[in-house]
Length: 180
Image 1 (cartoon, helix red, strand yellow):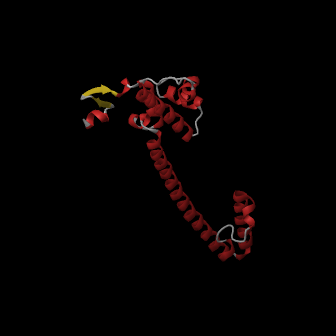
Image 2: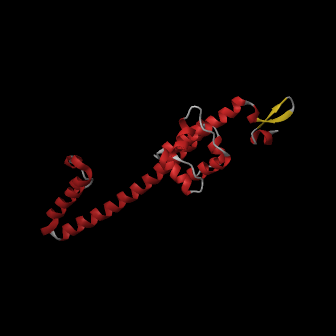
Image 3: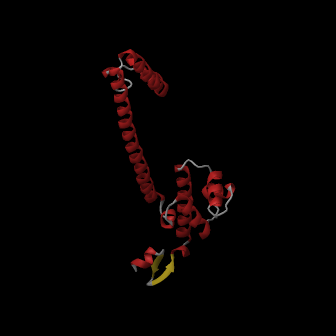
């Protein structure tokens, strides 16, 4: 029984029927797919044309207007199985994930975004450590060569100003500048 439910079957009066036999259930599933396609496309910052290009490149040719009709058409354009497989591959998600309720998928999307954030954070920490090492080397060079220490300090301020805009006017920007 549980396996039958997992395969999209429901029990009706002791017999098994395909869930799609109930038109409301079928439309709900199609609505889920349409919402998920739009959600995944927008999460990646892709246009409908970009998604169509990626599907075509992956071997699942579809044009931009078909993508739009799937997402927003009235009535929506139906997605065949091959196209659903293509969408899942292009989005790098499982077919189950694609056809499931968007609310559940949103949690997976949040998890993916958090993983991207954590990776970016780790890279920024590593970059900050590298910047601190470079700054320490410049400070050491300036201490050993007092005739260029002021020039080094001015150049550090200039680099920081170029990257940060007006924020460099803050007494604590760039970090460590007031420590020199």
